[in-house]
Amino acid sequence: MQLNYLNKPYFENGSIKNISSVLQELGVKNPLICTDPGLASIGMSDKIRGLLSNELSPTFYEETPANPTEEAVNIALKAYKENNCDGVIGFGGGSSMDLAKAVALMANHEGDVVDYSVNEGGVGKINETMPMIAIPTTSGTGSEVSLGAVIIMNDGRKLILASDHLRPDAAICDPELTLGLPPVLTAGAGMDALTHCIEAILSPVIDPPAEAVGLDGVEKVVGEESLIRAVKDGQDKEARWNMMMASTEGAMAFSKGLGAVHSMSHAIGADQELRLHHGTLNGVILPTILRFNRDHVGNKYSKILRAMGKDKSNDLAEEIEILNKAIGLPGGLKEMGITEEMIPGLVAHSMTDPSNATTPRLPTQEEWEKLFLEAM
Image: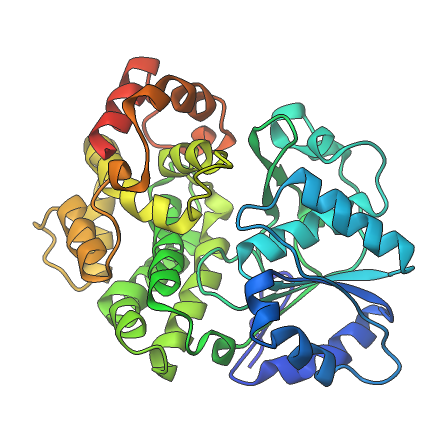
């Protein structure tokens, strides 16, 4: 099966076998493969190497941090240039795919990564990048079909890169690569996918097809209990397939934009000492923003609840809290190391996040402070 969506991802169990032919279609002979230490330690780099045909000469960058940084991009870029690479593969979770996008960008663009961030007016500066393939090994970010990447810059800000040129030229979505993913990572990544779907649906941008895709993602995650099933049994192939599809759908849907959940999680995620998981943050923060937006989204909560298989009279925020508890997420930001002293800095970061452009209700500075306190 091949999804007819922009970069037409190959989506099926075992589709990783297509990697050599996809590289050849793109004319890439010397790819830089960006992955992380965890995957490298369990032999996944060797798995990829074994699938590549003999005429391909890969270089591996295996040090992608949990939240990709400008520094890591520059180190990977150096490896790209020193080995005369001609394309990039992001192999792993959203961090590896986002780092790969940034390397593909900087391989043929001048200046620094930060120059191309949305905050610095970088959208219009981004032209065609080097060829890039995304191969997700988690089901959360949907970065394999999205036009964005999130990078922690050298000045400490966690900023967004966004351009049609950053959407991978091809994606290989093989749900079998997620079999056995630990429950804690399955849970956090799954809530990332669900939050993408929900925030996209709630965006005021009018795009019925994208909203329908988001609702289908919600149904797969919650209505079919795929997330709970995948957390309980990492070998549940049907649940893993549904979660990877929901992850991809979440990124398709957020072509409508995101919202305040992401503004807050980006702010917290910039803290390099805490190094908190983005998807877990989204899941923990989501109920607070759902309560804040409740009276500003028309009948969309009813649509979401129906997709979840719940009665439309139920409290959506409470349903998310029940789900968070069932999959073992923290009960609040305080459990994750956030203190009240951090809130002024988090508010300042949140107020400048591009996700605010499509939030259904834009908080004031005072409201941001209250939202962080409530999410504690």
